[in-house]
Image (tube, rainbow over all chains, first blue to last red; front, side, top):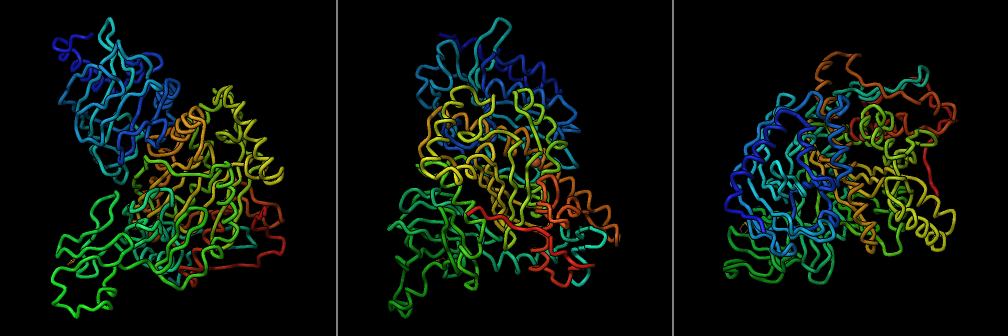
Length: 187
Length: 440
Ligand code: FES
Ligand SMILES: [Fe+2]
């Protein structure tokens, strides 16, 4: 069992470092934060906790698609991000949660964003723990400036030099994506 | 609009569209009246309301509506506006409710629209006729085809099937894909785009942009062993402004056209499903249902992407330069869980504002919207060229998906509805000119 009392600062450092990596557009470094086989999900704004393999989503990337997404974003032909968006991320309200029962929803935030982790998608989770946090991503592009607000609901695995993502999930707090707010960058 | 909006020149084989059509508030207002006020509009899918008293609120042509299944199971679309003084009656986005209560003076309405109570009714004439006259106002017309619910704000529209014409059968083909029928899933992509709604229609009907715009996606397909091709792919103009692209070469389709990235299990499932379809539909029909990808535009606000998977996309013009988009995934009611998981992963990897392809489409039409400001007031320079493939069509050769024939079909229909005086025709349309497709 992971000692949550001592590791929160380390998890915060991990999330802050990730935010800097993404703001610096360093996608090789970002990919290195994932364990092979990991997933990346961004549910839709009407999310009520359903599984991404049974519902529409904005992003439901398995490991192959995470790699394809990184490859795409590094290309000059990813037109929606050429030129790149300028982003500035704030991460806060970081909390750690042991995974005692993967099928039990996490009691955090609005009930509607609680989602159980299905064994079908995530396998054995006894070596991992869950971290929730709030994010604000400010984004400038095309003479516009938008903000994206939401909650992270990640599954992290301890690693010799910190942590790795097994699941990276960004749950938007918006009712819909406002004009121009396509998710061509990483939320 | 008396100045030229659409210029067809059969002698020079050119087709040009005035960029004012994407910018002008006056034309936007005319569209609201002549198109959105007078045609069948796609409201939503019946399966979005699986239970009695389920409701969704939705804005169509700028009008707040309540899309609801009443206590008897009937589908309704009410104007979301209290008959008393106009308050929005339902302020939730969705839910299940037997009654809608207006908070302002507490009038209440049943899910079938009838008044359930009016506080202090004794101050009114109070008879049944008065109560009946205060029911929630319905849209003028509502009809359903294969689960797709359409409404009209005027009673003066033809029957829905007449309006849909040949498009109706392509919707039926989708329903026939699986013996269990189709249903929408939760998880709606709700997003807005800084571009005119007509650019979203053009983009969907534009096979020419696929390789350059989706260069990174094409690369991903090639790496996973799929040979991308533009051969044998066609664009059709159906009646009443509906449009059709027939595609095969831009990716497989879950349970229909296998490709390597779908894996071996899916290959087996696809073969079994194909055999089942031949049994159920016959070889010829199964061929049209299974072996082609379709992108169907149902004029004016519905796009059905029957490609990797099935996406329903609805367009809601907000202003000349802003369009709200809503997209649902349509899936077989009964589907192998592995196939379902593969379907969702595959569909979402391409379509939607977080996919690997749609963001580039949005970038494209947002860039058009910005770029067309450059030529405003520029006379002959203020036109977009949509001549590609016209030379073939004149010879009687069916237009290709990588040409602009479907777009021309759209604009001919649009100009007749919105700005008939703005159509300029030079020369004569040759007899050999081809339109339409009907596989019934
Ligand atoms: S406006 Fe609805 S009860 Fe008065
Ligand atoms: Fe595209």
